[in-house]
Image (cartoon, rainbow, N blue to C red; front, side, top):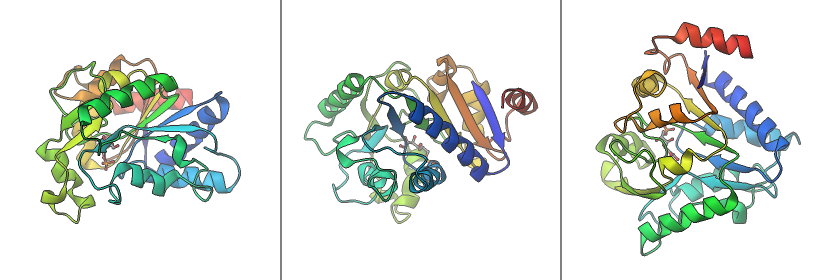
Length: 258
Ligand code: F6R
């Protein structure tokens, strides 16, 4: 795991965008794994800017989402498919087309079957060339909440009270409006991405980042499974890095390589 500690979120997003532009630009038939939530927003802003400048495009390329709320209305602005449309789809965004944006069908009558279909679809696409991840304050990645299987496939999961409270800000601050379940790529599915780039910002993520980088691999902190992946980069700001015991060493190693 490479850990990059940046003074600001902006600097981390600059690095992440440059790296993704490199990887996507250099791959044949790339599949970009995209996350939602607030963490990747500055990164997406930079990808849109690069598209406008003609140095990056997702035109003709595929993007796969990590997860989707179950039971959310098709036209709800917080439905992750709609969030990703707003951020990435269209010539005025990154050139990604709606047909090549893959998300779980969470309004299907049988969400578990829809989850299995989505897992198959990801396999058929060959998995993510590079997967963007955020992390929940309870250590989830996608919506793999604590206590699940470390090798799970795409499935329906119940959101923890912590996650629903964290995400209430997207639903007028009203906890009652936050969906209770999601379809989420499993940890086993995510681990098949060829490369992973995880971003985390702010004090609220500090404990989860400490566990992710320095904790024991455990279902209590699902993101720790990433320690078993051969190519993971963790990009954090100083607040999110504040509980890392070996922060100085990670910075030394990062500086030696970049
Ligand atoms: C979103 C996702 C989640 C978020 C996490 C952090 O697709 O899979 O794991 O990355 O909940 O959310 P933010 O970025 O809003 O703090």
